Image: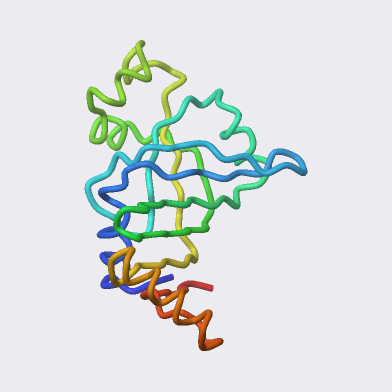
Length: 161
């Protein structure tokens, strides 16, 4: 788990990226697919709309351990979050997060019995944030190759279990 301050740090990193790759296990194969954030804040749980009949839901029921990764190469932000997935029928949250973007993926509307939310409770993760421009990063890499030292490209932090 992480502190409220750390949760805000994570949210600041991912809220503008919007789309994360959700990784589930399908038998002995890992599968990733893009998922779009719908919430306005982060308290340790991420929410995504899904069809209850989707393969990712079936996979999450068989093994609820999932991973989400977010990446913004331009800003040098990379976030990996691991947690557990659960299907939710919370009508209040479905109503709260519904918007025209979501509606485009669910033409029968939010009252469609196949519409649900995928709740991901984050347990642990890691994030990286480049502290300088690409030019500085190239300089650090070149310097590291000439000195046999590891390049200092920015912040890296693990959290959780």
